[in-house]
Amino acid sequence: MRLGPLLILLIFTACVAAFAVATAKPDPVYRVASGSMAPALFGPHYPLTCQRCQLTTALDATNLPKLATCPNCGFQDNPVDASQLRPGQGLVWEAIEPGQLKRWDIVLLEDADTNTWQVKRVAFLPGETPRIRQGELYRDAQLIRKSPREREALKQLVFDQAHAPPETPRFRSYHAAGSGWNVRRGSLGFAPIGDDQANSSDWLVYHHHRCLPPPSPNDHAASPLDSYGYNHSVSRELFPVSDLWIEFVCAHWQARQLAIRVQGRDQVSTIEVDLDRSIVQGSSNEQAVTLPLSVDSLAGMTVRAGECDRQLFLELERDRRHWFFPLGEAAVPLGNQPLAVKIGDGQAILRQVKIYRDIFWLGRERRATPWSWDRALAPHEIFVLGDNVPISDDSRFELGPVDVRKNLRGKVLRVLAE
Image (cartoon, rainbow, N blue to C red; front, top):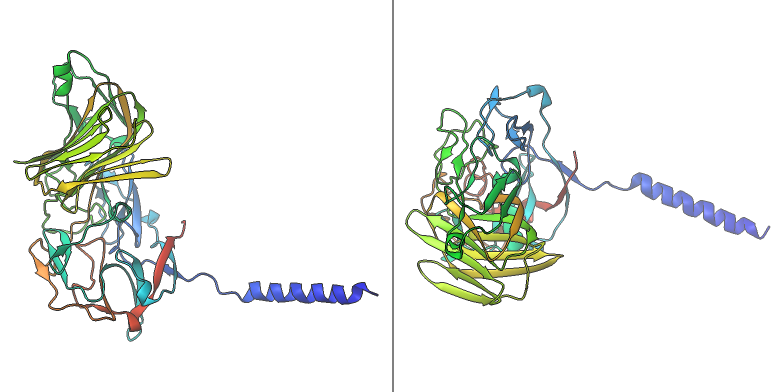
C-alpha cells in the first residue's frame, strides 16, 4: 500500500512529460526561396558534378541550360538533368533582440503587409551611413575590415587544386626546366635541386583562368573577376577583384622559409615566413611590416595568405591554435598570374590547396562605381545585403533600410542537412 502514492506520482510525471513532448513546438524552419545568398545558402538549385574535374557545385534552378559550365575547370559540356533539381535549403533560426545583432549575421526578415519573408546578411548597423566603393564596404569614410572568422564565413571559392584539370594545369613553375616543384592533382610538392640561387627563384605560379559559360571567352589565362558560377543564366558586366588569397595545409614540412607573392599588373606584394629568424614579413610598394613569429615549424599547419579588405595578411592555424598577422595596406590590381608560392631551405608537400576571393560588393546600379545611402541609419534600422550581390534585391533597392522593430524575425543558426 505504501507504494501506491509513489506509483501514482510516477504515472502523473510520465503523462506530463509525454504531453510536453507532444505539444512542444519544433525549431522554427525556413526554406530558402531564392539564390540571393548563394553560395552561403542555396535556393532551389541543381547539383552539378563536373564530368572533367569532378568538382560538385550548384546552379540556380531558374532557366537551367542544357549544358553547364564548370566554374572550377571551365568544362562547358556538362549535361543538365532537370529532374534532379533540389529545393531551397532549410534553415533553423531563433528569435533575437535587435540589440544583439552583429555585422555579418544572417537574419530572417518578414514583411507582414505582404506576408513575404527574406533571408539576408547584416552589412550596416544603426548610426552608420552605408557606402560601397571599389567592391568594399565603408561605414561613413572608414573601410570595414573583417576578422579572420568573418572572412572565412564570406569567402568565395575560385579554384580547388584537388579538382585541377589535367589539360590546363593552373600551378606552373617559372623554371621551364630544373624546377624542384612536383605538381599533382591535390598536392604541390617541393624538393630543392641545383644550387641555392636556382632554388631562390623557383616560384610556383598560379595561373588564373576565367571559367565562364557561352558566349563568353572561356578557360584562358586572365585576371580574376567577380563571377558567380551559381548564376549560370545571368548576363552582366563583370568586374576585376583584388581580394584574393591561397589556402593550403603543410602535410609534410622540412623547410625553413615560405614566401607568398601577390602579383599585380604593375605592383607586387610579398609575404615571407622565416622560421630561423622567427619573423613574418610583409612588403608592398607602399610599406614593409615585420612581426614576431612564435612557431618553429609549419608541419600540419593550415596557411592562408594574400590580400583581403585592402590588407595584406597571413593566417596560421593548427590544433585549434590560431595566429593572425596583418601586414599592412595593399590594393594590388591583379593580373592573370595573381599568386605564387616559394619554399626555402628544405622540402615540403602542400595539400588541400584552394584559391579564394572576397565578395565584391556593388552599388544600386549593380556596378563598381562608388555609391552611398543618402543618410545615416536610424537607431532602429539595419542595412542588409545578399552574398550573391549581382542578383540580390536588398537594402540597396526597394527594401531599403530594415526597421528591426517591425521586420526582424530572427537569426539563422544552421542549415538543415538534405
